[in-house]
Length: 329
Figure 1 (cartoon, rainbow, N blue to C red):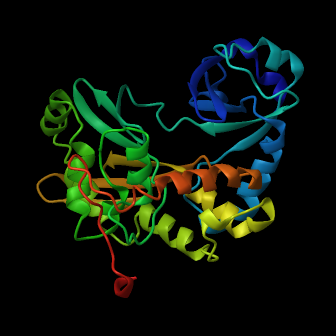
Figure 2 (figure 1 turned 90 degrees about the vertical axis):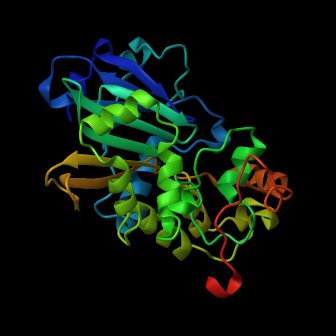
């Protein structure tokens, strides 16, 4: 794309992640409508991965794993005038980084946004009080065959003092998927539940059907995370040289975000027919496929050591996670 068309006053601060800032296009250029611009925040130079390297990583490593599920991105080069004029809401951009990523705003049509927990949100598109589509946004984190009282994700959430919402591992098994979906939707306000019911939008049945199938995005993510297991035990990593390319990629897949989009009728995705409700289409897209710097191993090791006492603990406010025995793996 011709970078001269990107004007700083046409991009408004939208959101902040751990390493990136997102800006929403508010200008009149039709080709940029419903797009976001992702720019890198200021970080320690020793652990910083440039945008150009991230793009190459996605193109050469990630797209081979998920040919159709990754949100499309476009690399754009930005000049100093654009970067210095942009309103960053008080946050600092990475000095010397002249590239950004353009990506579609998956929530552009949604007008009701609900944060359910740290790693899960629900976004709805409503017209005249009727729900037309829904987007579940979540971070699945570590997907694996758990052998402890608590999985890695639930353990770290407890360690950080969060309230329980749902366990992602429940969404991987036909035996527990209904429980997982009920927990996930249990945080919805009564008004939202009523709106979904009055709109004849059976979100619970749709999610149970989707996550209970073998082609759900969580099943695909788990399979890829499993395939990258090179036997490395994080607590035993002593240096960057102990971090293989496979482990770095696996850690990337353990930190991606996912949009699960549900629309009425037949669209591009998995068509699900719910009796007495009609046809819906469910499609998933993956985002935040950032290459993890090998120097990050210190944080991984430190976190793993802190979790040692949590994995097999008991908490009356936090039911144990689904567990597989060694013979079931």
